[in-house]
Length: 332
Image (cartoon, rainbow, N blue to C red; front, side, top):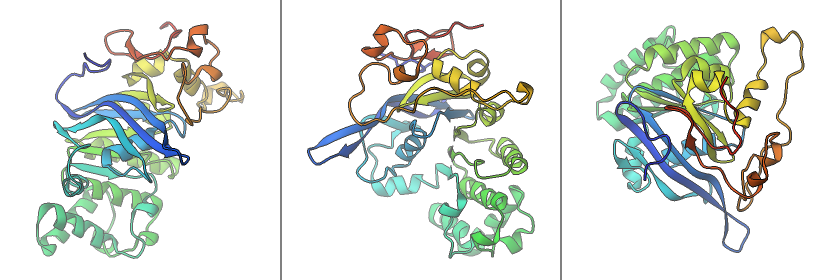
């Protein structure tokens, strides 16, 4: 049986199949599902955006791919295939080689990702030495070229700097250089422009567009404007589940799920002439037990009686868009 959304053109590099992630709660063996059956495909050379409010499961999905779930979190069901290799079952040493090798990662705040007591060059050289087995002299040459390619000025000076000696934009460029060092198949980017000013955001997005040509990108963001600029497709997450997925332009111009509609309506827009921002009523669902019915029902203005008791499944509404809703909006 195929899962809705499986029909992706081109070679699939990263495939997530029916992924469930659980965390224990209390002291009686109880568990809560944080990710509830997520299925996604990332095609070769594609950019897939994950959007949704804080707590929707975006970052938890990224950590699942990396095998870095916090605490006692575990993948209870499903698979994560990187070129047909299941990351859920590989050994810990193999997974460490994949991280930084086949998978590069750009985190939201480089100050929490870069070691504050190590020089930039030390981080880059160690990564190259570990994954490509080249000597440190040659690794330094490659590291300098990597910094130059991502637009770090005076790389011979910057490579000796500590993270706190660089601006936020330069630190993020260093993180991008680090992610690209070993020609990864996949780049995981967790809101890499959130902590930056608007001008620097545009520079980083332009850098990702021009420099990341051979890798596929899984791009996490809460900013639909950023997603529209960079992503080929987007998947909207709510309460640990994909509620809408499709080509970015189609989803943003003709949203079908009420939650997607709410996210778009809440975006600031220069043409609204001081109109107050619209908000989605209520608060994001807190996953503390078994979910009955649709997780969005308490906040939805289009809810039906069956939404209280029956969980909608992701279904195709045309050739490319998939929606999980019993009373979805019609396209305009």
